[in-house]
Length: 327
Image (tube, rainbow, N blue to C red; front, top):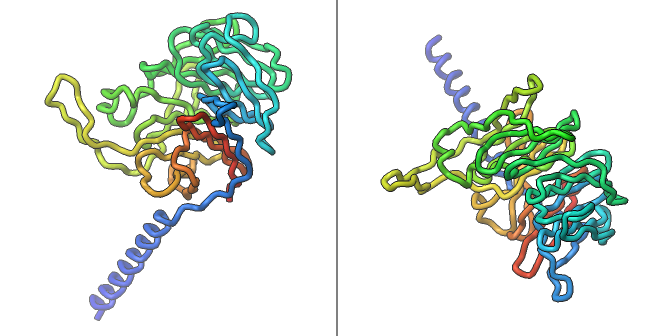
């Protein structure tokens, strides 16, 4: 009787466990929440064609970088109306040769990175007056401001972190090593970027795969990396030729942004349904919390603020910027 009793309890426990697993599976596969549009600013009209390269939120502004015309446009975060457009091609103050990226500067400031000029120049988001210039060396790929106010960057193609300070050259920090060494064989995986953050959380993501690393300083020159990931299939690699070729790999990610303890990831090839998908992860445990559904599949970049998700759509006719209310 005792054995039978334990067997029944064991079966019941297994049944409960299976039920929990099924409920967890259903929860993780829950339908994504649809977002409500608040405003849309179009730059794809015949008389207003503009193709922006970068979107960045700072204060109550949505900043857009136009690489072709070497200028920055600011939109109202509340209404989407254009507030100002400034900058031109050149090497003087407020001018850029080939602007590459927008950099969050804190305290109502933003930076424009120009690798051709070898500098990041920070401006006020209201007066566009030059405040600080950081010197660059080599091709840098992405930028993030730490809580200390210093700026980190990633060397393009080398996967090396550098720190930028006033009046000094870049200080080399650690190399970035992915959990699976064979990923380093693919150039696309070497184009690592920082997720957009205004809270000093520097999280690195890669365009393909679900590997995220938060930079956590344990000393002025040593960095530790945490991994945030979901379980993904091991990639299949063809090594028969002179160069390894990826046959099947994890899903692509288009862009990423951070708000508080959440990581927002704009999905690429992993989502085949209507519109575009944004997965939300907890930075505390790396687990996916929920998914958000955008109505258009051509979403290119995202940024987040309290209550809003800003989406940059890149089309053949120009750019479209939309603000969506987050549930």
